[in-house]
Image (cartoon, rainbow, N blue to C red):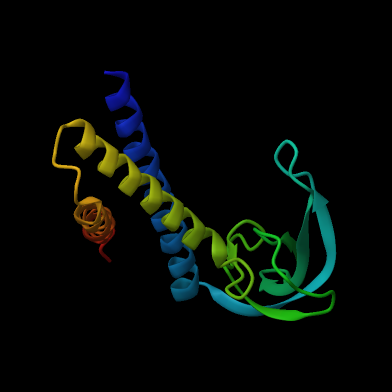
Length: 171
């Protein structure tokens, strides 16, 4: 019984990572579609402590100007990852004019997280599915078939979530 728990746990963790990836992609697409585009400049790097023994990360800090009711205001935002860049470098930024400090997207600097979450999710979803099928006594000679079935299931899950989201949030 414990074996099934870990198989289902891996499948659920994979599905959650795929959902997180979808959510990140949806928010970034929404900002690209409805936000304002501007230009951000890297002004310095913030050193963030990594998880446990991992090395610290150098996260770029950007500045950009946006107009509001009171005129032009300068905002300072951190990147979402430790992307390769230099101080003074300019990059496009999409932001929500109602809340530019919290809702922004740096397409050339913060694109990696959604892909990392998707591939990690797909890996765990497939791994859990393969071992679950093996533990349910399906023939184990053809793991490639299990991998294809798992990838198809994960893709179908992501596609279905997108369709449901579009139906709920239709404008």
